[in-house]
Length: 381
Image 1 (tube, rainbow, N blue to C red):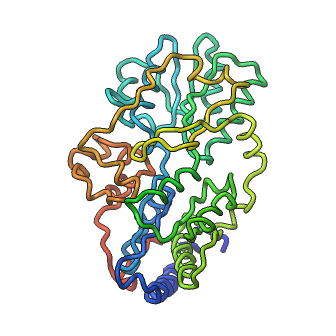
Image 2: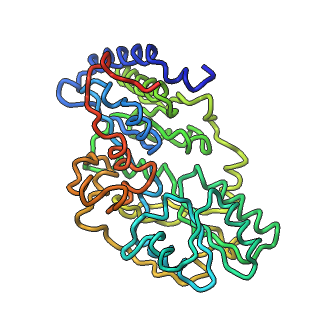
Image 3: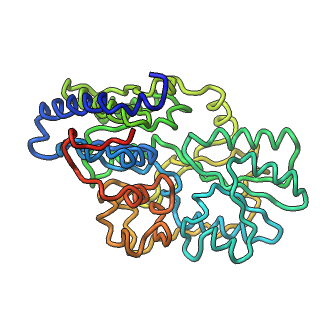
C-alpha cells in the first residue's frame, strides 16, 4: 500500500476485525476477564478514538491508554521552573504550543505571557535559535521536551549553536526515555497487561531492539505500530496471534518507517549531547530511575538549569485531578471525577486535557464512542 486512503479501507478493516474476534475467542483468559493491551503512544490513542476503533473491537479486548504523551507526564514543579525562567528580565522563552497551557502550581506559561513575560510559540528548536541570532542582546531559552522522538532535533540545534558561537541561547532540558517508563508500568502492581502496541515515532529513532526486555524478561508481546486505522488493527491482531501461539516477541508492524537498528545519525547526536539523569519525576508515575536525560558537561553553556537559578520544587497534583491514575491505565479518562466538568480543554485541571496527544483530550474530542458490532461500525475513510 502506498497511499493514506489504502490504510483506511473499510473492507480490509472488517477482515481484520473478524480475525481479531476469532483470535480473541481462542484465548482462554478472555472467559474470565478482557485482554489488556496498552498503546504506549498518545498518537495511537487519538487514532483509536478518531476512527472509532475501540468501539469496533470485541468486549474481550480492553485498550489501556499509556503515558506516551511527554507534555502529559510533565510534573507541575517543572512547569513552575519554566515560568521562573520566562519571567526573568530580558528573557525570550520559547516552547511548543501544547506546553503553553499546562498548569503549574500557580500559573501556566500562557498566563505568564498574559502577565507580561515574553513567551513565544515555536515549531522547532531551530526557530528558537533563529530568535537568538535576531536578538543578540537577549537571552533565549527553548523548552525541550519529548521522548527520543524529539531528542535529536534539540541535540542538533545545540551542535549548530556551538558551531556558530552563539552565546545567548540555552535549553531547558526535559527530554525523557521510553524504556524505563515501560518497565515502571510493567512493575506496577495496579495493572495487569497482556501486550503492548509500541510507539512508532520513538522507534523511528531508537529502533526495535531496545524493547527486547519486554518479551525476554516480562514475557509480554509488543508490536511497534503505525498510526493509520489498519496499522492499529493489524498490530492488535499481531499481539493476539502471539498470545494464541504462546509467543512473546517484539515485532515491527511499522516496518515501512521504523528500522530495526534505529536512526544512526540521530542516535549519534543523542549520545554526543546527552547523558542519563539518575532519576526524573513523572506526573502520575513518580520518580523513575534513568528515565530522563540532561545536557552533558561539555555543553553546559547551553544548559538553562546550570545558567539560571530555578525553584526545582516537587509539587503534588491537585487532589481533584486523577491524571496519575489515567496515565498508568488504572482509570479511563471519563472515570475521573472532574472530567468534562471542572476539567475541559478550555479550563484544564490536568495536563492530559491540554495536550493534543493526551488521553483525556482524545476522549473529550471524540466522545460518544460506544462499543458496537464491527459490521455496524462507521469507520472514517
